[in-house]
Length: 326
Image (cartoon, rainbow, N blue to C red):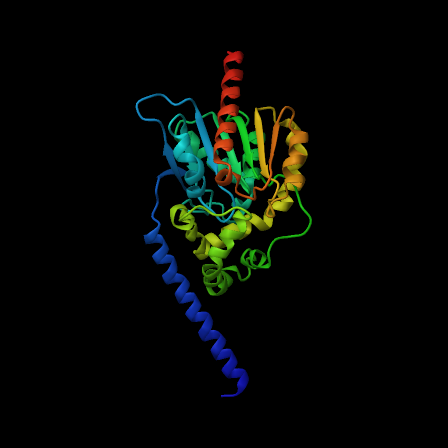
């Protein structure tokens, strides 16, 4: 066997071994992190969500929690959901393609507008027609899409380090590769899954920096579900397609009139507080901007009490406006 044939055989062997390993890892992850909530049917599939409410008394309203990229509903529930559920009905959704939610529209579901429609359909199936919407990071785009396109649903808005405006440049090379329809399945099975498994802990520390991740974060939030090839590809598509979407949507934020609170860490190196939160604060009349010194990209974990207070404030203002309109 000549060198070229040997190299080709070796490469094929490594790729096959990686692919088999990815399939085996996916099976392990599915068993280790089973669904924690309930499934709600939507057109073409189903949405997985966690539905909590106070015991023995009526909730003060509904709060919808929307997670960011590379995550699932476990992140928002860990930081906020369990504490909010003592007074609100809390719905924490796995976005399409993440956690245990289907991605019925495939690549089309990378659009925040499309995800908003899917989530709205799921909420309607639960009989929920009004909610304060809390969106972190990527879901800054999703939360504002709900406020713009489903005005009757959104009574208030809380944005946490939200991505709301276009930015210069693109995304990381591995997200570009994993979202390329020509070879995404090969890449995610042979490169992305094993590489991400090795880099996951470092990635978590980088997202939280300069703050420390909570103890047991990866296990408690089931974030390792991202290692599954299909979810890795969905996440990459979401990130790759977001900039073009925000170029269009960011022109409309002046249409948002509901009570809005915007919180962003000044030390955030993932989503620029100036490019996104400062900018949208100028566009939404009456919105409240809180910049947090020494806080990175995860304000709901680093400043949980402050975030909960803003959710309470927005909820109270939403109730006051609803009563005034009656």
